[in-house]
Image (tube, rainbow, N blue to C red; front, side):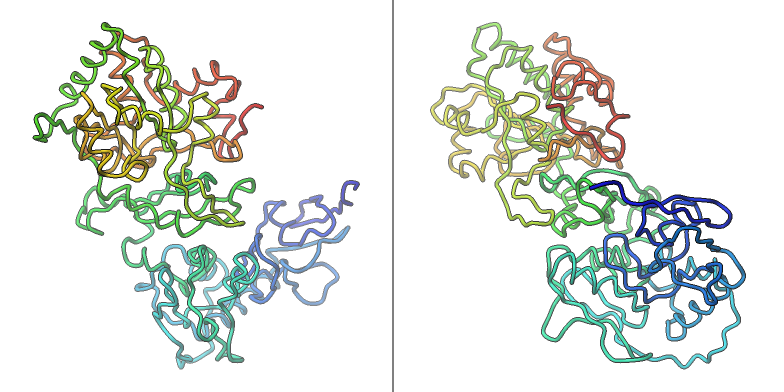
Length: 536
């Protein structure tokens, strides 16, 4: 098929060329003259029912909605004419006839398109009295979403999302005229695996997130671009953290992460993310390993980094000197970044440890939209670095007392081998080291526990199942005494007189991209916001 025919339109005096079939709204955006909209969403069908995107088109007697009108050759569009601005003002007045004036107590305040557009296009003297139609308020419609029908402007985005994206069809618009209201079909609950997305696409405060409601005002939120570690899809996200916590730590029980939001990437997740990833952030601030722990003769006590790394390095040095490193094993995790894995490969490879593998967590559910059965963010990266997969062999050797030292990263071995087996392993080994972010049974049984940073506390990259390398960035300072995995490994390397030293994740990736064929020529700049594919 050939290239689509191009048409040239003039928007606010600027000429722009777009493919035939492009809407006026899209042409206006390309021309740098965006128009307001509520019902339009680039990932959904066009409904054309909110009417706020009115523009004036030359030789057309009435203002036209930009979202539904196709751009035509020679069309002249004005987005800021008196006629267009007055038409939008009238539309806003109608939208607000029955809208409650409860902005101060609305959880959408600060990111509400009604507020924003009123300040840009409203500011009118109202012609209607304050007798408003009453509708259901603060109604839970599922485990994740709350409905306030009075605040709804009937944009129908949620209806189209559940009809077209999840194909679960929970929402509908009921009744007629000014009694029309959004709601669920009889006998239905909003329980699909992507329910949180209807909150993201709701332009007003009609649909709010039950997990986030009243936890934090949005103007106190910091935002950091990152990647969801919940499965091998690697959905692009923003981490919204509570910057107010620095001076009001009692808010939300001291939690730092308030919510996760999807970030647009056309090649990975488009505009969406699943609920499993959205609400799976609690481990960032809950059940964390905050301090170094040492166990001796069955007694556990908090130690220092110097004591812990000293104990590990002394054991490894002794085994190296005695040529016993064939009795040492390392189980890396597919939750480690490419940078962490590369440094681990350098450190243990330089030391002479041959038995280095990585392990994925147990498989989970999957679907045909986003969710992958592989619940690890970087198994593909570990494979690209040439690290063998599977902890089974090392677990079996440890049970047979063929290992003296086992170094485990992040992964709880209990789901893989069973609690009795892991307890036997800990008893058989001279040293069981656990380096990870959260408490688990393996950490409790380990002789040395080294607390490491979660993905939200460090910079680096993950490689998703498609082979797309994507950036993560530190949104938070490390919890307690935890450190990035690569930094802990570099400190261990220094004690073992290994030439492995890095100042930051960017430096690691610079060397990695020079030495590893699959990453050849890549840089953080090349990866950018949308990611870059592994070399074939």
